[in-house]
Length: 163
Image (cartoon, rainbow, N blue to C red; front, top):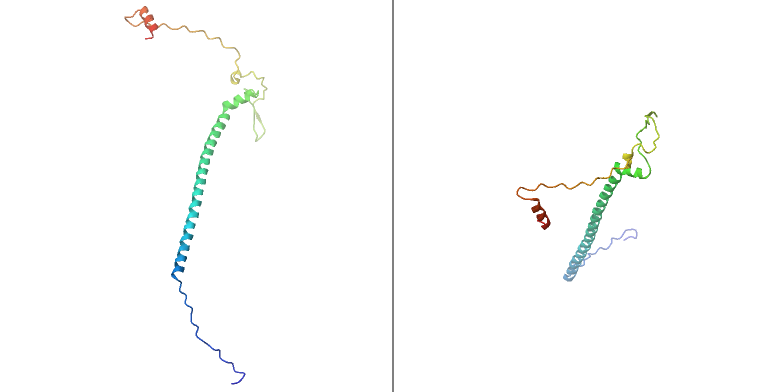
């Protein structure tokens, strides 16, 4: 043999190590998987329950806010009605103008004659009367005709007994 020739590597058979899992190891792995699954189910159930309570609370709040919005809308409609606006304007000292004049914004022309008001032009719109109403005269009670077969004395006696 020469020093220049490569030598062949020594090969040998390697025997595999036995990889059997004992029965106790298998039971341990299965028990671990079952415990992890139960823990996961418990966590998910708890979260769903908490979200359910939150959802019920939000629905209740939504219903209350809906009622509040409806009440505020009703109040706004009542306050912004023509009668309410006229009453508020009268309380602020504003008077109705029976001689309106209108400005056309497109061309700047004025329709009507602007006339100043004194405040006494339309007293019925302001809730004031120009003259006091006459006092109401008392109305005398009307006499009821007596039914046939009864006298006036019988009616008086029957009226005093409460019949």
